[in-house]
Every structure is written in C-alpha cells, then in structure tokens.
Image (tube, rainbow, N blue to C red; front, side, top):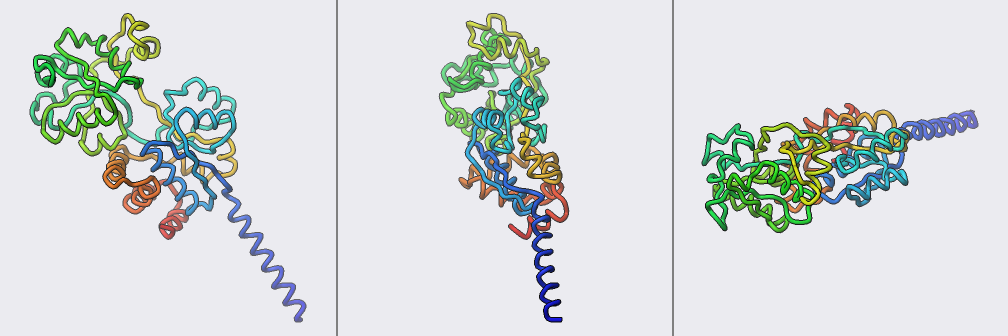
Length: 339
C-alpha cells in the first residue's frame, strides 16, 4: 500500500511537470529590436511586458535602427521582431524577403495617423481663422501671414536641417510649387533642436508657423500641430524617387506633389511565428496604437525624460481599454497582475 502511494505520488509529480512544460511551451525565447527613437522604444518594451507576462515568452531586447535592424533580420534571421519598421526605406528588399519567407509583415499599420508632410500651429488658425481647411496650394497665396524674421516682406516656410533626406524633398517641393516666385523663403533650421525650437517659440508666442514635420512625435502631441492637405495628389513614384528625393541638379523639373505615403510595419521572423505560436502572432496582428495616444505617450516621455521601459508601464496602467483588446482575457489577467 505504501509502495502504491509512492508510485502514484511520483506519477503525479511527473504528470504535473510534463503538463507544466507543455503549458509553457507555447512561447519560447524571442529577440526584439529596441530602436533608437521614442515610439520604437515604447513599443518594444510594451511588447516585452505583454509577451512575458501574458504569454510566458522569454524576451530579450537588443539595440536597433531602421536599416541595420532590417538588414540583420533579412540576412541573419535575428532579431525576431522589429515593432516599428519604416518600410519606405526598404521597399524592394522587404518584398523579396517576404516572398522568400524570411520575414512576415505581421502588422501593416501598428500606429494610426502617422506620416510626413506640412503642418501649421493652432496659433496660426487662431490668428487667421480662414486658414482652417485651406490646402497648401491656397496657403501659398498668402506669404504675408508668415513673415520671415530676416525679411518680413517674405513668407517663411520652415524646412529640414541640411543633411536630412527631407531637406532635399522640401527644397524640390519649394521649386515645384514655385514658392520663391510667390514670395516665400525656405528656412533651414540648422538642427533637430533648431526645428523644434521654431515650433515651440511660435506656439508659445501665438505667432504663425508653417513648415515640415512628421508624426508620431512629441512635438505634434505637445503643440497639437495640424496637418495641411497639399491640395494636389501624389504625383507618382517616378517623380518622387527619381526627382523629389534627389539633389536639385538631378531634378530639373519637379512636379507638385503630396508627400509620399509613409508605410510602417511590424515585422517578425519565420522563427517568431514558429516559436511564439498562433496566439502571440495574433497579438502582434491586433496591436495598433491610435495616433493621439502614441503622441500623448511621447509627450510623457519627453516631459519626464522617461525610458521606454518606464513609459511601457505608464501606457499599460493608463490605457487598459486599448491594449486589453489586443490580448486574450487570460493573458490580460496575467499582465495586470504582473504590473
């Protein structure tokens, strides 16, 4: 009888151990890129917490940046995930990698409302209410609304610092829309801090501001920048890639165009799909940050000098109504308990 109890007890322990192994085998070790800008840091750390607490994965975060991360995923199969891949920079190689099965586009739009283009401040609308709803083509008829500091008889359009890709694009669009003839000057803000400084100074003083920026960013969130419709359609990839994005000596006849559409994906490796399993892949597919919420988090990070790991906790505590829809009920319970 005693021996029988020992055998049963031993079998129970073995069964429980086996069951535990099976239960936790749904997700193994995954490597996620934590890229070097705020929204990417936030997303990587939210993914880490959700996958570890909710699905039992073992997650390692590694430093990353747009091109090096993609190249490593494509050539070496690691990291297993890039939460925020700006796809415009890798259009053709990404198509080839997806076709070959090396990379999976798990989420085609992990953040809403993103993109590059031309913006105005709320102070501009307050001073000139008629500008609300006007297109860029219409705004360009009123350079007097944005007097340049150096020459108030000219309208100031704030472009990108020299050396940035958008500096070339804005310079060519400046020519395409014949802005000089219409009374405008293109302002080089000198640096990222200089560009941000023009926005904050104008916003704080209520002065009009018109220029280039991108979203999601803390500046758009903090100062409620308003995007401007160009008033013309996108003039096509041939014009954009083979003229607008090239130095002016290689772009003799730029056509007026809306800014090319920004594509951001969450990419995973073939190993991610296999190791993480269906539920984990399903989480990535559902994970979409509303643009205003993302901008609010970026403002939080900037104002508090918060790291991605700190911001992830803040996001999960503050926005359960959003991330709770990305995960199963069981996972949600575990994640809340683990915060």
